[in-house]
Length: 248
Image 1 (cartoon, helix red, strand yellow):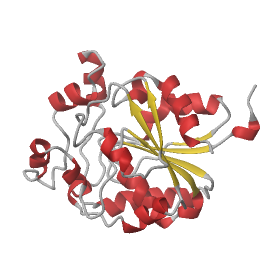
Image 2: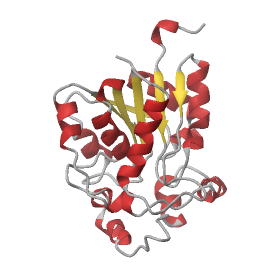
Image 3: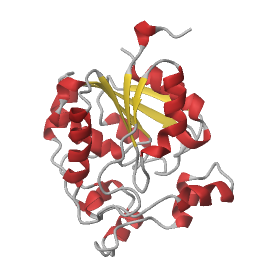
């Protein structure tokens, strides 16, 4: 029996190289529990998407989606680089959001670009890219770091669905002063979900603990089975963890 008193509105935002479809299994689980779920695809993502965009364009498409669908009391969830998109979106529509949930996400320091949050050996990749071609990380890196709990065949299936995204998403420096004010003042609450086998960013200086720390001492931290693409391998468990992450 669905408990209507505990229903939430989730907006699930995909990470780089993917689309809203990456959340389909988790969305189905949440809807089965009576929650309202949205899985937008942001500008610059998907087959044929424009690569002549900057980070603000992706954020703008997310804010436009929230406004066009007249969403309020939203649990806004960001996977991987979408941590930066939900942070900037929160600056524009703070009154529409009840909680930000970061799933295996980058939490970018004020004044940094996304590329600054990668280990140096990976950061160097972004300086060699042709903006006209966009950026798509090599299969071997995705396979060993993000698909480490899958068979090679499953990793290849995920990679085959990926498409390049604008280089500017990684190289634009981000002014996040308003975001850090909103969470520091308690105007927006945060949660961080760490899949236990996620090594997309290795433990230590670039690990999830440092990113969660940036969200302040009252950030709700949860762990869940799976690795970077837990929404594919463990959708039921991730959906349940999202419910715990999003509730008051």
